[in-house]
Image (cartoon, rainbow, N blue to C red; front, top):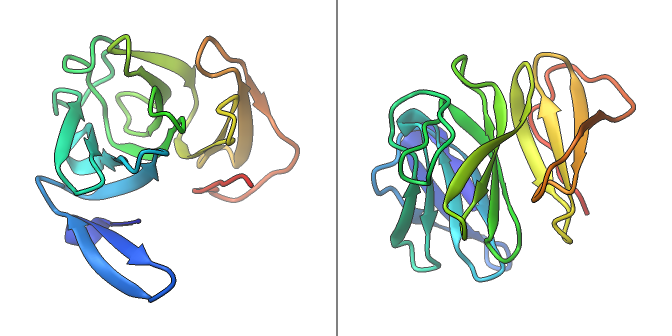
Length: 178
C-alpha cells in the first residue's frame, strides 16, 4: 500500500504483477502514513484531516479516530485530537496503533488502545516522523526529523522509555525493521 499524499488516495500495489489500483480516496486529505494488520485492515494517518482511519480489506471505512480538530487531547477514540499525524504502525492483531503526531500542537508519539478505546501519549519528541514496530509488537522504533535521531521504545503497549539508538542522521523520515 502507498499513501499517495498529493492525490488524497491510498494505492494498492500487487508486487507480483505490478498492478496499481486505488484502494480508497474516501474523505482523505493528504494521507502520509499507512500500515496493515494481519487481518488485512489498512490504517491511515489522514494528515490533512487530523485523524486516523481504519479500512477493512475491501476498502470500507470502519473506524475514524479523532475529532478532526487539530490538537493534542488524549481521550477516547472519538474525542481525542491529533495535529498532523504522519508515521503509523500497528500491532499485527490490530489491538494497538502508534502514531507520530508531528504538528506543532502535539509533537508526540501517540498510543491507541483499540480494545480500551483510549488514546494516550507514549513519548514526546521535537518532530516525530517515521515509525516501525517489530513483528512481536514489543519494540517501537521512531525517527525524530529535527534532532536526527532514531530511538526505540520497549514494551510500548504498557509503558515504554524512549532510548536513542547509536548514530546521527539528517532529517530521518522513515524506519523499518526486519
